[in-house]
Amino acid sequence: MKVAMATKDGEYVTQHFGRSPSFHIYTIDEETYEWDFLEVRENDPACEQGHGSAAFAQSIALIADCAALFVAQIGGHAASAVSQRGIAILDKAGHVEELLDAYITYLQKTKARAEERTARIAARAAIIAERKAAETKPALADDLATSLEEHPCFASSAEGRYGRLHLPVSPYCNIRCRFCERSCNDYENRPGVAVGILSVDDAVDTVRRALELSPNIRVVGIAGPGDTLSTPNALRTFEKVHAAYPDLIKCLSTNGLSLPGKSAQLKAVGVRTLTVTVNAVDPEITAKIVDGIVFDGKSYEGLAAAEILISRQLRGIREAVAEGITVKINSVLIPGVNDAHIAEIAKTVAALGASRHNIIPLIPQHQFADIPAPTCEEVETARAEAGKYLTQFLHCAHCRADACGVPGETDFSSQLYATAVMDTFSHG
Image (tube, rainbow, N blue to C red; front, side):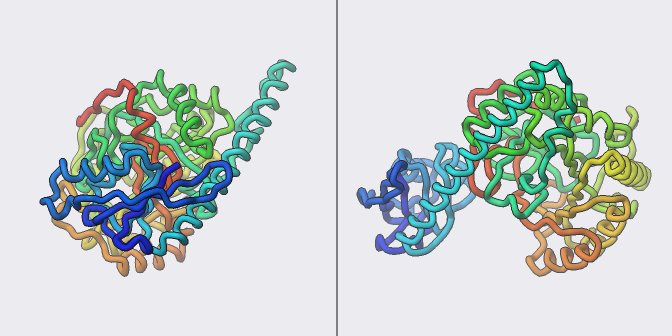
Protein backbone atom coordinates (compact mmCIF):
# COMPACT_ATOMS: atom_id res chain seq x y z
CA MET A 1 0.00 0.00 0.00
CA LYS A 2 0.99 3.65 -0.39
CA VAL A 3 0.94 6.33 2.32
CA ALA A 4 1.12 10.08 1.72
CA MET A 5 2.87 12.51 4.07
CA ALA A 6 2.04 16.25 3.97
CA THR A 7 5.53 17.59 4.58
CA LYS A 8 7.71 20.50 3.59
CA ASP A 9 11.12 19.08 4.37
CA GLY A 10 10.52 15.32 4.13
CA GLU A 11 11.50 14.87 7.76
CA TYR A 12 8.43 16.04 9.63
CA VAL A 13 4.69 16.13 8.94
CA THR A 14 3.87 19.75 9.75
CA GLN A 15 1.62 20.90 6.92
CA HIS A 16 -2.05 21.83 6.66
CA PHE A 17 -3.53 19.85 3.75
CA GLY A 18 -4.44 22.98 1.83
CA ARG A 19 -0.97 24.49 2.27
CA SER A 20 1.33 21.52 1.81
CA PRO A 21 3.86 22.15 -1.00
CA SER A 22 4.40 18.45 -1.52
CA PHE A 23 3.38 14.96 -0.54
CA HIS A 24 6.12 12.43 0.18
CA ILE A 25 4.92 8.96 -0.79
CA TYR A 26 5.96 5.80 1.04
CA THR A 27 5.14 2.17 0.36
CA ILE A 28 4.31 -0.41 3.05
CA ASP A 29 4.65 -4.10 2.23
CA GLU A 30 1.47 -5.70 3.59
CA GLU A 31 3.22 -9.03 4.13
CA THR A 32 6.50 -7.97 5.78
CA TYR A 33 5.25 -4.57 7.02
CA GLU A 34 8.46 -2.92 5.90
CA TRP A 35 8.25 0.62 4.56
CA ASP A 36 10.25 2.37 1.87
CA PHE A 37 10.36 5.85 0.36
CA LEU A 38 8.85 5.99 -3.13
CA GLU A 39 8.76 9.56 -4.42
CA VAL A 40 7.94 13.23 -3.89
CA ARG A 41 4.80 14.61 -5.53
CA GLU A 42 4.85 18.38 -5.84
CA ASN A 43 1.58 20.08 -4.94
CA ASP A 44 0.05 23.42 -5.89
CA PRO A 45 -1.52 24.33 -2.48
CA ALA A 46 -5.24 24.95 -2.69
CA CYS A 47 -5.15 27.60 0.04
CA GLU A 48 -2.92 29.69 -2.17
CA GLN A 49 -5.45 29.46 -5.01
CA GLY A 50 -8.47 30.79 -3.13
CA HIS A 51 -9.69 27.44 -1.72
CA GLY A 52 -11.42 26.53 -4.97
CA SER A 53 -12.87 23.06 -5.38
CA ALA A 54 -10.75 22.48 -8.49
CA ALA A 55 -7.58 23.23 -6.54
CA PHE A 56 -8.53 20.79 -3.80
CA ALA A 57 -9.41 18.20 -6.45
CA GLN A 58 -5.91 18.52 -7.92
CA SER A 59 -4.33 17.96 -4.51
CA ILE A 60 -6.55 14.95 -3.82
CA ALA A 61 -5.75 13.50 -7.25
CA LEU A 62 -2.07 13.51 -6.29
CA ILE A 63 -2.72 11.04 -3.47
CA ALA A 64 -5.65 9.14 -5.01
CA ASP A 65 -3.67 5.88 -5.09
CA CYS A 66 -2.77 6.09 -1.38
CA ALA A 67 -4.47 4.21 1.43
CA ALA A 68 -3.69 6.82 4.09
CA LEU A 69 -2.77 10.48 4.45
CA PHE A 70 -0.76 11.94 7.32
CA VAL A 71 -1.41 15.66 7.73
CA ALA A 72 -1.02 18.16 10.57
CA GLN A 73 -4.46 19.64 9.93
CA ILE A 74 -7.26 19.38 7.39
CA GLY A 75 -10.53 21.27 6.95
CA GLY A 76 -13.93 19.61 7.03
CA HIS A 77 -14.69 20.01 3.30
CA ALA A 78 -11.32 18.62 2.24
CA ALA A 79 -11.52 15.81 4.81
CA SER A 80 -14.89 14.71 3.46
CA ALA A 81 -13.59 14.71 -0.12
CA VAL A 82 -10.48 12.74 0.85
CA SER A 83 -12.51 10.19 2.85
CA GLN A 84 -14.86 9.66 -0.08
CA ARG A 85 -11.88 8.41 -2.06
CA GLY A 86 -11.39 5.72 0.58
CA ILE A 87 -8.25 7.39 1.98
CA ALA A 88 -7.81 7.18 5.75
CA ILE A 89 -6.94 10.56 7.30
CA LEU A 90 -4.47 10.65 10.19
CA ASP A 91 -4.23 14.24 11.36
CA LYS A 92 -1.04 13.80 13.37
CA ALA A 93 2.08 15.91 13.16
CA GLY A 94 5.47 14.41 13.90
CA HIS A 95 8.60 12.78 12.54
CA VAL A 96 7.86 10.87 9.33
CA GLU A 97 9.68 7.69 10.31
CA GLU A 98 8.05 7.58 13.76
CA LEU A 99 4.62 8.07 12.22
CA LEU A 100 5.25 5.26 9.74
CA ASP A 101 6.38 2.89 12.49
CA ALA A 102 3.33 3.72 14.60
CA TYR A 103 1.01 3.24 11.62
CA ILE A 104 2.54 -0.15 10.86
CA THR A 105 1.97 -1.21 14.47
CA TYR A 106 -1.67 -0.14 14.11
CA LEU A 107 -2.04 -2.11 10.86
CA GLN A 108 -0.57 -5.22 12.46
CA LYS A 109 -2.89 -4.98 15.46
CA THR A 110 -5.90 -4.34 13.23
CA LYS A 111 -5.10 -7.40 11.14
CA ALA A 112 -4.67 -9.55 14.25
CA ARG A 113 -7.99 -8.34 15.67
CA ALA A 114 -9.76 -8.98 12.36
CA GLU A 115 -8.40 -12.52 12.29
CA GLU A 116 -9.45 -13.01 15.89
CA ARG A 117 -12.93 -11.71 15.11
CA THR A 118 -13.27 -13.93 12.03
CA ALA A 119 -12.30 -16.96 14.11
CA ARG A 120 -14.78 -16.00 16.81
CA ILE A 121 -17.61 -15.58 14.31
CA ALA A 122 -16.79 -18.93 12.76
CA ALA A 123 -16.79 -20.61 16.16
CA ARG A 124 -20.13 -19.07 17.08
CA ALA A 125 -21.59 -19.99 13.70
CA ALA A 126 -20.55 -23.59 14.34
CA ILE A 127 -22.32 -23.55 17.72
CA ILE A 128 -25.49 -22.18 16.11
CA ALA A 129 -25.34 -24.81 13.35
CA GLU A 130 -24.98 -27.59 15.92
CA ARG A 131 -27.98 -26.32 17.83
CA LYS A 132 -30.10 -26.10 14.70
CA ALA A 133 -29.08 -29.63 13.78
CA ALA A 134 -30.26 -30.79 17.18
CA GLU A 135 -33.55 -28.96 16.58
CA THR A 136 -33.02 -26.76 19.59
CA LYS A 137 -34.08 -23.15 19.70
CA PRO A 138 -31.92 -21.40 22.29
CA ALA A 139 -32.33 -17.77 23.21
CA LEU A 140 -29.34 -16.74 21.10
CA ALA A 141 -29.03 -13.22 22.38
CA ASP A 142 -28.83 -14.48 25.95
CA ASP A 143 -26.72 -17.56 25.10
CA LEU A 144 -24.16 -15.53 23.18
CA ALA A 145 -23.79 -12.86 25.84
CA THR A 146 -23.03 -9.41 24.54
CA SER A 147 -19.97 -7.75 25.98
CA LEU A 148 -20.06 -4.05 26.73
CA GLU A 149 -16.27 -4.14 26.62
CA GLU A 150 -16.61 -4.45 22.84
CA HIS A 151 -19.07 -1.55 22.45
CA PRO A 152 -17.17 1.60 21.39
CA CYS A 153 -19.95 3.89 22.63
CA PHE A 154 -20.28 2.29 26.07
CA ALA A 155 -16.73 1.28 27.04
CA SER A 156 -13.54 3.30 26.76
CA SER A 157 -11.62 0.00 26.53
CA ALA A 158 -13.20 -0.55 23.11
CA GLU A 159 -11.88 2.75 21.71
CA GLY A 160 -9.85 2.18 18.56
CA ARG A 161 -10.44 -1.59 18.69
CA TYR A 162 -14.02 -2.32 17.73
CA GLY A 163 -16.31 -0.87 15.10
CA ARG A 164 -19.98 -0.04 14.83
CA LEU A 165 -22.44 0.15 11.96
CA HIS A 166 -25.37 2.56 11.93
CA LEU A 167 -28.34 1.62 9.75
CA PRO A 168 -30.21 4.82 8.74
CA VAL A 169 -33.71 3.33 8.54
CA SER A 170 -35.64 5.92 10.57
CA PRO A 171 -37.16 8.67 8.41
CA TYR A 172 -39.29 10.70 10.83
CA CYS A 173 -38.79 12.58 14.11
CA ASN A 174 -41.52 13.25 16.65
CA ILE A 175 -39.87 16.20 18.43
CA ARG A 176 -38.42 19.48 17.19
CA CYS A 177 -35.15 20.39 18.92
CA ARG A 178 -33.79 23.86 18.35
CA PHE A 179 -30.22 22.55 17.92
CA CYS A 180 -31.08 19.74 15.51
CA GLU A 181 -30.95 20.13 11.75
CA ARG A 182 -31.42 16.78 10.07
CA SER A 183 -30.08 16.42 6.57
CA CYS A 184 -29.39 13.92 3.79
CA ASN A 185 -25.86 14.50 2.47
CA ASP A 186 -22.47 12.83 2.22
CA TYR A 187 -20.22 15.51 3.71
CA GLU A 188 -21.34 16.50 7.23
CA ASN A 189 -19.98 14.46 10.13
CA ARG A 190 -22.58 14.88 12.87
CA PRO A 191 -25.69 13.19 14.29
CA GLY A 192 -28.92 13.56 12.36
CA VAL A 193 -27.20 13.20 8.99
CA ALA A 194 -27.17 10.29 6.56
CA VAL A 195 -26.77 9.95 2.83
CA GLY A 196 -30.41 8.83 2.76
CA ILE A 197 -32.92 6.42 4.28
CA LEU A 198 -32.12 2.72 3.97
CA SER A 199 -34.92 0.26 3.27
CA VAL A 200 -35.62 -2.24 6.06
CA ASP A 201 -35.42 -5.01 3.46
CA ASP A 202 -31.85 -4.00 2.57
CA ALA A 203 -30.58 -4.00 6.15
CA VAL A 204 -29.27 -7.58 6.39
CA ASP A 205 -27.31 -7.33 3.15
CA THR A 206 -25.92 -3.99 4.32
CA VAL A 207 -24.64 -5.63 7.52
CA ARG A 208 -23.00 -8.37 5.46
CA ARG A 209 -21.19 -5.89 3.24
CA ALA A 210 -20.18 -3.77 6.25
CA LEU A 211 -18.53 -6.77 7.90
CA GLU A 212 -16.58 -7.40 4.71
CA LEU A 213 -15.32 -3.80 4.78
CA SER A 214 -14.69 -3.71 8.53
CA PRO A 215 -14.52 -7.19 10.15
CA ASN A 216 -13.99 -5.69 13.61
CA ILE A 217 -17.55 -4.32 13.72
CA ARG A 218 -19.18 -5.57 16.92
CA VAL A 219 -22.23 -3.31 17.09
CA VAL A 220 -25.19 -2.78 14.79
CA GLY A 221 -26.94 0.39 15.85
CA ILE A 222 -29.86 2.48 14.70
CA ALA A 223 -29.51 6.16 15.51
CA GLY A 224 -31.65 8.01 13.01
CA PRO A 225 -31.54 10.22 11.13
CA GLY A 226 -35.04 10.63 12.57
CA ASP A 227 -36.15 9.20 15.90
CA THR A 228 -35.83 5.43 15.90
CA LEU A 229 -39.10 4.66 17.69
CA SER A 230 -41.39 7.11 15.91
CA THR A 231 -41.87 4.51 13.14
CA PRO A 232 -41.78 0.66 13.22
CA ASN A 233 -38.68 0.61 10.99
CA ALA A 234 -36.07 0.12 13.72
CA LEU A 235 -37.86 -2.78 15.40
CA ARG A 236 -38.48 -4.48 12.04
CA THR A 237 -34.84 -3.97 11.07
CA PHE A 238 -33.48 -5.40 14.31
CA GLU A 239 -35.77 -8.41 13.98
CA LYS A 240 -34.23 -9.24 10.60
CA VAL A 241 -30.64 -8.43 11.56
CA HIS A 242 -30.79 -10.30 14.86
CA ALA A 243 -32.02 -13.43 13.10
CA ALA A 244 -29.12 -13.25 10.64
CA TYR A 245 -26.39 -12.02 13.05
CA PRO A 246 -27.33 -12.99 16.61
CA ASP A 247 -23.76 -12.55 17.87
CA LEU A 248 -23.57 -8.83 17.06
CA ILE A 249 -24.51 -6.30 19.75
CA LYS A 250 -27.76 -4.48 18.91
CA CYS A 251 -27.96 -0.85 20.05
CA LEU A 252 -30.65 1.80 19.67
CA SER A 253 -30.66 5.57 20.25
CA THR A 254 -33.87 7.52 20.83
CA ASN A 255 -35.20 10.78 22.23
CA GLY A 256 -37.40 8.64 24.49
CA LEU A 257 -40.82 10.06 23.64
CA SER A 258 -42.02 6.74 22.19
CA LEU A 259 -39.92 4.51 24.45
CA PRO A 260 -42.48 3.55 27.14
CA GLY A 261 -44.04 0.15 26.50
CA LYS A 262 -41.38 -0.84 23.97
CA SER A 263 -38.63 -2.33 26.17
CA ALA A 264 -39.87 -5.91 25.95
CA GLN A 265 -40.10 -5.62 22.16
CA LEU A 266 -36.60 -4.17 21.99
CA LYS A 267 -35.18 -7.02 24.05
CA ALA A 268 -37.04 -9.57 21.92
CA VAL A 269 -35.27 -8.31 18.77
CA GLY A 270 -31.85 -8.41 20.40
CA VAL A 271 -31.38 -4.86 21.71
CA ARG A 272 -29.21 -4.93 24.83
CA THR A 273 -27.85 -1.37 24.87
CA LEU A 274 -29.95 1.76 24.66
CA THR A 275 -29.07 5.46 24.47
CA VAL A 276 -31.69 8.04 25.43
CA THR A 277 -31.07 11.74 24.77
CA VAL A 278 -32.17 13.75 27.81
CA ASN A 279 -31.26 17.43 27.70
CA ALA A 280 -33.20 18.53 30.78
CA VAL A 281 -35.44 17.14 33.52
CA ASP A 282 -36.94 20.55 34.26
CA PRO A 283 -39.88 21.42 31.94
CA GLU A 284 -38.97 25.12 31.83
CA ILE A 285 -35.48 24.29 30.54
CA THR A 286 -36.75 21.64 28.13
CA ALA A 287 -39.20 24.20 26.70
CA LYS A 288 -36.20 26.36 25.77
CA ILE A 289 -34.61 23.46 23.89
CA VAL A 290 -37.60 21.76 22.25
CA ASP A 291 -40.06 23.70 20.08
CA GLY A 292 -42.70 21.01 20.16
CA ILE A 293 -43.61 17.33 19.99
CA VAL A 294 -46.10 15.09 18.24
CA PHE A 295 -47.61 12.58 20.66
CA ASP A 296 -50.61 10.30 20.08
CA GLY A 297 -51.37 12.14 16.87
CA LYS A 298 -51.50 15.57 18.53
CA SER A 299 -49.04 18.47 18.49
CA TYR A 300 -47.88 20.07 21.73
CA GLU A 301 -45.67 23.08 22.37
CA GLY A 302 -44.12 24.93 25.30
CA LEU A 303 -44.40 23.56 28.83
CA ALA A 304 -47.07 21.05 27.85
CA ALA A 305 -44.70 19.46 25.33
CA ALA A 306 -41.81 19.55 27.80
CA GLU A 307 -43.79 17.89 30.59
CA ILE A 308 -44.97 15.07 28.34
CA LEU A 309 -41.48 14.50 26.90
CA ILE A 310 -39.72 14.36 30.29
CA SER A 311 -42.37 12.09 31.79
CA ARG A 312 -42.12 9.68 28.85
CA GLN A 313 -38.30 9.71 28.87
CA LEU A 314 -38.04 8.88 32.58
CA ARG A 315 -40.68 6.18 32.38
CA GLY A 316 -39.01 4.62 29.35
CA ILE A 317 -35.59 4.58 31.03
CA ARG A 318 -37.03 2.91 34.13
CA GLU A 319 -38.76 0.23 32.05
CA ALA A 320 -35.67 -0.46 29.93
CA VAL A 321 -33.47 -0.96 33.00
CA ALA A 322 -36.08 -3.27 34.52
CA GLU A 323 -36.00 -5.29 31.29
CA GLY A 324 -32.24 -5.80 31.67
CA ILE A 325 -31.19 -3.32 28.97
CA THR A 326 -28.08 -1.23 29.68
CA VAL A 327 -28.95 2.45 29.36
CA LYS A 328 -26.65 5.36 28.48
CA ILE A 329 -27.85 8.97 28.56
CA ASN A 330 -26.78 11.58 26.01
CA SER A 331 -27.07 15.24 27.00
CA VAL A 332 -26.26 18.13 24.68
CA LEU A 333 -24.44 20.83 26.66
CA ILE A 334 -25.93 24.20 25.64
CA PRO A 335 -24.23 27.24 27.22
CA GLY A 336 -26.68 29.58 28.91
CA VAL A 337 -29.54 27.09 28.60
CA ASN A 338 -28.82 23.80 30.40
CA ASP A 339 -25.16 24.08 31.38
CA ALA A 340 -25.99 24.51 35.07
CA HIS A 341 -28.53 21.68 34.91
CA ILE A 342 -26.42 18.78 33.61
CA ALA A 343 -25.65 17.36 37.06
CA GLU A 344 -29.37 17.30 37.89
CA ILE A 345 -29.99 15.24 34.75
CA ALA A 346 -27.30 12.77 35.82
CA LYS A 347 -28.68 12.52 39.34
CA THR A 348 -32.23 11.91 38.10
CA VAL A 349 -31.44 9.23 35.51
CA ALA A 350 -28.92 7.50 37.79
CA ALA A 351 -31.76 6.97 40.28
CA LEU A 352 -33.67 5.20 37.50
CA GLY A 353 -30.79 2.81 36.77
CA ALA A 354 -28.95 4.46 33.88
CA SER A 355 -25.28 3.50 34.03
CA ARG A 356 -23.42 5.90 31.72
CA HIS A 357 -23.58 9.53 30.68
CA ASN A 358 -22.29 11.18 27.51
CA ILE A 359 -22.15 14.99 27.58
CA ILE A 360 -22.05 16.25 23.99
CA PRO A 361 -20.90 19.82 23.29
CA LEU A 362 -23.44 21.83 21.29
CA ILE A 363 -22.80 22.17 17.57
CA PRO A 364 -24.01 25.75 16.86
CA GLN A 365 -26.61 25.39 14.11
CA HIS A 366 -30.31 25.73 13.26
CA GLN A 367 -32.07 27.93 15.86
CA PHE A 368 -29.05 27.75 18.16
CA ALA A 369 -26.60 28.88 15.49
CA ASP A 370 -25.84 32.05 17.50
CA ILE A 371 -25.00 30.17 20.71
CA PRO A 372 -21.25 29.49 20.85
CA ALA A 373 -20.06 25.94 21.41
CA PRO A 374 -19.09 25.30 25.04
CA THR A 375 -15.44 25.75 25.92
CA CYS A 376 -13.30 22.83 27.03
CA GLU A 377 -13.46 24.22 30.56
CA GLU A 378 -17.27 24.31 30.48
CA VAL A 379 -17.41 20.73 29.23
CA GLU A 380 -14.97 19.51 31.89
CA THR A 381 -16.91 21.31 34.62
CA ALA A 382 -20.17 19.70 33.52
CA ARG A 383 -18.53 16.27 33.39
CA ALA A 384 -17.01 16.69 36.84
CA GLU A 385 -20.38 17.62 38.36
CA ALA A 386 -22.34 14.93 36.52
CA GLY A 387 -19.61 12.40 37.30
CA LYS A 388 -20.65 12.48 40.94
CA TYR A 389 -23.72 10.49 39.90
CA LEU A 390 -22.90 8.66 36.66
CA THR A 391 -19.84 7.24 34.91
CA GLN A 392 -18.90 9.71 32.17
CA PHE A 393 -18.25 8.48 28.63
CA LEU A 394 -15.52 10.67 27.12
CA HIS A 395 -14.92 9.32 23.61
CA CYS A 396 -17.99 10.32 21.61
CA ALA A 397 -17.16 10.91 17.93
CA HIS A 398 -20.39 12.77 16.96
CA CYS A 399 -21.20 9.95 14.51
CA ARG A 400 -23.49 10.21 11.51
CA ALA A 401 -26.62 8.08 11.32
CA ASP A 402 -24.95 5.99 8.60
CA ALA A 403 -21.51 5.59 10.23
CA CYS A 404 -19.49 2.45 9.51
CA GLY A 405 -16.12 1.47 10.96
CA VAL A 406 -14.05 2.17 14.08
CA PRO A 407 -14.94 5.60 15.53
CA GLY A 408 -12.13 8.06 14.92
CA GLU A 409 -10.07 5.48 13.02
CA THR A 410 -11.85 4.21 9.90
CA ASP A 411 -14.89 5.31 7.94
CA PHE A 412 -16.40 3.05 5.29
CA SER A 413 -19.83 4.69 5.07
CA SER A 414 -19.24 6.21 1.63
CA GLN A 415 -18.20 2.82 0.24
CA LEU A 416 -21.01 0.98 1.99
CA TYR A 417 -23.84 3.24 0.90
CA ALA A 418 -22.44 4.45 -2.43
CA THR A 419 -24.54 2.03 -4.49
CA ALA A 420 -27.47 1.64 -2.10
CA VAL A 421 -30.94 2.80 -3.12
CA MET A 422 -31.69 5.47 -0.53
CA ASP A 423 -34.79 7.54 0.07
CA THR A 424 -35.10 10.93 1.78
CA PHE A 425 -36.78 11.49 5.15
CA SER A 426 -39.84 13.29 6.38
CA HIS A 427 -39.45 16.69 8.02
CA GLY A 428 -42.86 16.24 9.60
